[in-house]
Amino acid sequence: MGTAVGVGKSTHRRCRTAGSTAAESALAGLGGHKPGLVLAFATAGYDQEELLRGVSEVTGGSPLAGCSAEGVITHEGSDEGSHAIGVMALASDRLTFDTFSSGDVSAEPRSCGERLSEQLRAAPAGGKLLLLFADGLTANCTELLAGLTERLPYPVAIVGGTAGDLLNFKRTYQYCDGRVASGSVSAVLIGGEARPDIEVSHGCDLIGLEQTITRAERGFVYEIEGRPAWAFFKEYLESDAEDLDALTVAHICLAELLPRANLDYGEHIIRVPLKLEKETGALFFAGGLKAGTRVHVAMRRPERICERAVASARRIAARHPGEDPLLVLQFDCAGRGRLLFGERTNEASIQPVQRVFGNGVPWLGLHTYGEIAPVEGRAYFHNYTLALCALYGAGGS
Image (spheres, helix red, strand yellow):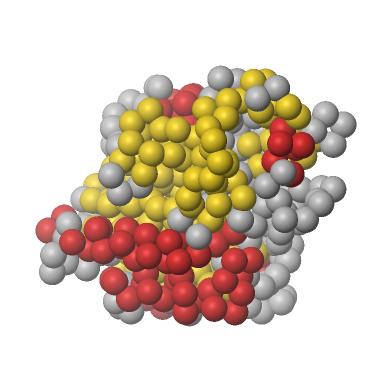
């Protein structure tokens, strides 16, 4: 049978109906075959457990993974409404699928990553691609990746994103086999004749002088050049902000110097604060910035975001001339949707990327609170980026 992929979407406000409707549309693309894997991304206006019940009723308990999102992306474009769910179903006799989950990513991110690597070791078949969906508000994803990659039983490409909500930064949800959790990470290992190709890009330019983080702990940055982190950060904001919210950090971020520069990606990795500890002025970065880290303040440039996103897609396509991918997964920062582009989001940043591969390629994505993708072969946690994963089969089948 090869590999069949279907994608469905619903914006119905009834939770179970939305889940079942999206799942039915996805299964319609499988030619009657039972899915070996179901991926689901949904915005946080739904009761998440009821929503997944609707999906599972249709998919018959097939392995499922995914997370809540700030927005859902399909060939219809980006939908950042309060009620939207996208579902991708895959059936294949050439690919293998294994789902995993691990809790306590908030309190013990490195240990959580180590437990995931042990689960990979116990999987019945080796994998080629690992998809990760972690809590987007509380996880130190750099530590998660460190624990995971230090004990990987075999080389595997890693890509994914962290779960979001409706930009109110209160609670996110992770899905694994019909279960819903917070403060956790869910994962999918895809093996067999899978050939993943991944690109990551951002559109930020450095401003100001290089600075050094002088005090940090557990993902919280307390001081930059001996000054309270919030006081330092506020100097670059246009308004006299009293709290950290999506609009406050819509354009300004930090850029951490990479150990090794990449010609296409650049020399710095982008970091965005997600939480403010008002008592101390500390900022929480899911990228896990540490004392001694050298950083620049950086500013996003909408035109560069669009240009570099399309260039990323073209690099993937150029490496596979005359070959269509089985599917494309898009992990796109929540700050690169309507918060930045307004009503022009699809026209400016989504459709140009999709046109590189064509309308016939199954496509599912989400707006995340952080992206996971490799640079020079090493998996990093990113912010304000696009992580694009095209999955090819053996010989283009």
